[in-house]
Length: 191
Image 1 (spheres, rainbow, N blue to C red):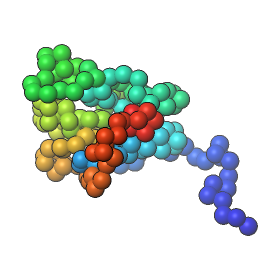
Image 2: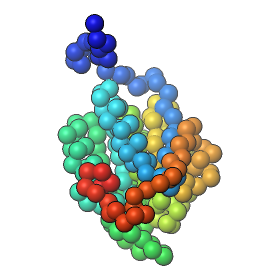
Image 3: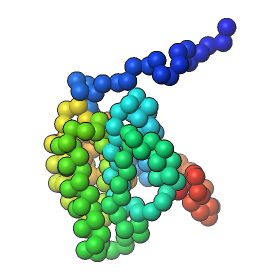
Image 4: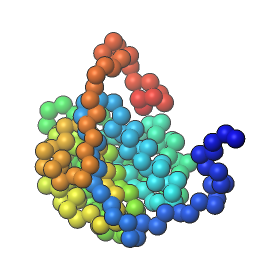
């Protein structure tokens, strides 16, 4: 008889209850590909268990493929963008900073509402590195996180204080990337 990974119909699985479950702080950082992909995979896994997820995207703005895909889970996954959708070189503009600050204020409200089980701050490490957010903003979010909420922070160049405060840190290390051979970001794979 072949092995069945899920022998019962999905509807018979119990939905996970997070009210008494400990939430941790995860950081996905490093120069390698896969930080956002890992966070989105976690979001989908959480939604599959019936958990509510909030994703704040710093830096990004626009209709990326992941936004279109996550629309299918809109009853459990909310995505909001707090960026201007452009590369920032040098000092960020006032509007870039205000967009990121709006995002931090929204994340604080989301965390205090108690309505979400998983909160993902996508590219928050980059927002700190670029001066859109102060590292203190991110550390305050981490310190104030309710015990039953899983908090995920992504982006390269994580501040050492953020790494120290986290419970789990994964560093994506680039060994080889086809971008170095001139391959542009592809729809459905990188964007």
